[in-house]
Image 1: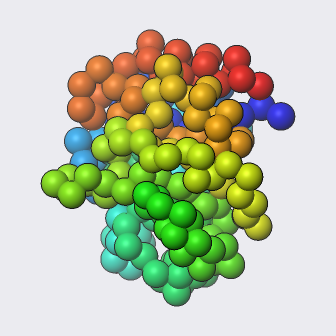
Image 2: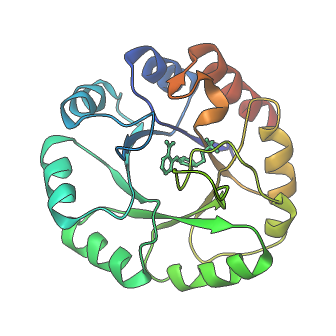
Image 3: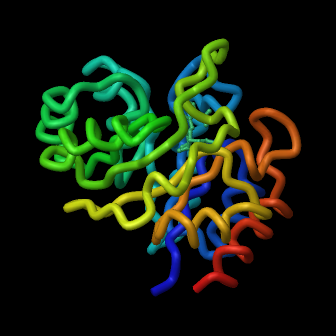
Length: 214
Ligand SMILES: O=C(O)c1ccccc1N[C@@H]1O[C@H](COP(=O)(O)O)[C@@H](O)[C@H]1O
């Protein structure tokens, strides 16, 4: 089965085209002011309208308020909500019910215990996303280009679909898939030529590296 890819932090049309034409299943729009990939709602709406049929548009939020979610969803056609903050299982369930959209919950992984804790989200999230714990000095809860020990996922089974992220690059993604057993991956900083700017050539290289695994 082909590996599914999400290219996160799309903020210009050339990156969107490289992702969609290269076979990405998801494109991610970041709604988090501290991120260099943050997009305004009008720009996000413009980009989302360019997403071809068959590619899903994901909105990435970090501990969003209900008001902000309402505004974003009123202006931007999203297919999936990604929650990348400290949202509790109850908050994930409430957001999912209120907005009637599938939710992907990001879980920060450093040790096997972090994966055990992730099981609390299996009942409430539609997709689990395993990302590395951010470095202590980072202002971002994700998008730091940091990987975790992929062997922690080897042989683990989940009742929900899941994605791997954290420090993936065109050079490492095949090995990460092989070790973790992931059938879906998410990348942000690993396909950039400077913080917050996707390089279309790196996006294409990442998607080609994935195709070579399948
Ligand atoms: O990309 C961001 O700026 C971002 C900001 C806040 C939370 C999450 C963010 N990105 C997500 O982080 C992971 C890993 O990114 P990277 O490939 O290590 O740079 C990925 O799931 C992004 O969706």
